[in-house]
Image (cartoon, rainbow, N blue to C red; front, side, top):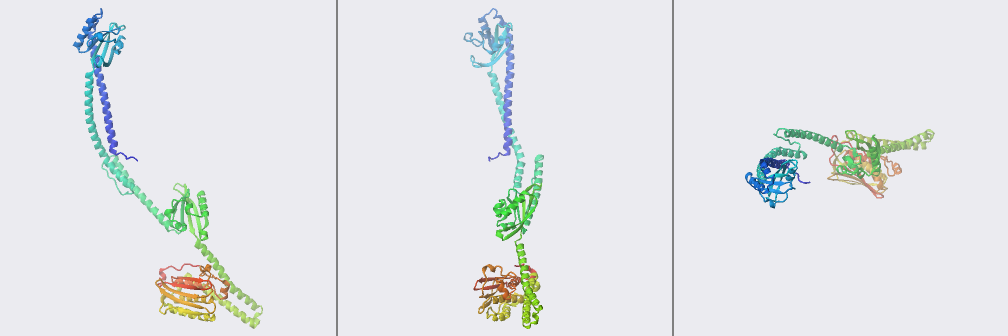
Length: 603
């Protein structure tokens, strides 16, 4: 872009140009007027002279006396200081004050001569080759105006007029130059006086353009510029107020969208993203600043969701659906509605996506839990009911069978009681751990000794040896009762799934991260596909063998909840056919229950 001229040139140059054009017009008009006035006066003067000598010349024309007439013209020209010429109707010159008539050509074609022979006064100005100067000619007819017999022509040179006009031009040029100079200086001063406040206005407006709306403009000049300054100051204040309001609202909306757990995606009618919050970024793996402005198909790779967005854009009514992402690992409940501007016009679509993966998972766990509880309770209840009916039908009269049946009934009742006890333990741990946990400084070594002692009889019945590998000075902030129960469950689990003659190793260690209790067996091991679900309630790798061994399917789930009560965790490493190692990780310092959340609901 070409550089723009300053204001001074927009004012100065037109002023100077106007003055120069005006001077030229005035000079031309003055010269034209002076020349015309001079010419009119000369014409009147020449005509007067002609009429003065007309009678004298007429005396030499009738009869015609050329020699005397030529001498008269010479005398008149010398006396009256002008050129006298007498021309006959044929155009022949018979008398001239400044030239010999023998050397002069026919003058019939001269304009003033032709006009005079027509009975009127003839006037003409032209360059005379005879006298080598510009001349003014006035011709008057002689005799009858309807049929003149001769013409008297008078002429004077115009070089005086030309000198006067040139002098006039010089005076006008000098005066005009002075006027132009003074006008230019005045234009410069006027432009500076106007330009100064305008330059201040321009600088302040530039600051407004940069966002510095706290600047204010003060101009002393009265009139329009002052009103303009007041209007600009008012505009800046209003813009500042509105921009602050819009910025605050924008930041509030950003903060609200960023803090929402629901994924928010807004698209325009061409399917380009105009809003994309942090929850949506986590869901689709793209930051909001990179997603906004791109087509939704570049960010979302799910055809079902794309089709839902297009339906929302096509139809204004709200709609809702459930969509599965990431090959079934993420479930969304999607709400879609039309996005409108302030005039009610449709400009796009707004999607609100709730991640219901955990809800779906918890629903599945609840269904599995209900099914497992029903199944686990139904087995001993069915067995009890069957043997009771058998006893009612007469088996109670048979002492041998009756005793065996009653033993089975007692065993099933004990199993039912164990299941109920374990369920109650889980319920208490999940509902309010602070009401059932007493965290105190305790001897971890003593707890492990007690747990080994509790499980020793069951291990000896299967010819298993329990090895201990932990120091006597191992202490920690724990609930001794809950930790002992967790270790007992881990040892009992190792006893159940170990073959006779093997060893079970109970160890404990301490490091910067906390206390680590490990129970290792050399049993059948756990297939890798089951390791991720081994701590779920009622989950069994081998259901038939687990029931045969008397397991309820809740022991490892109880261990997991006890670990979470202590802000710890439990893990397992297993190799199929070589055994498993269960590890209970406890932090050194347990936060007070009043300062921490309850353990989350687990699987």
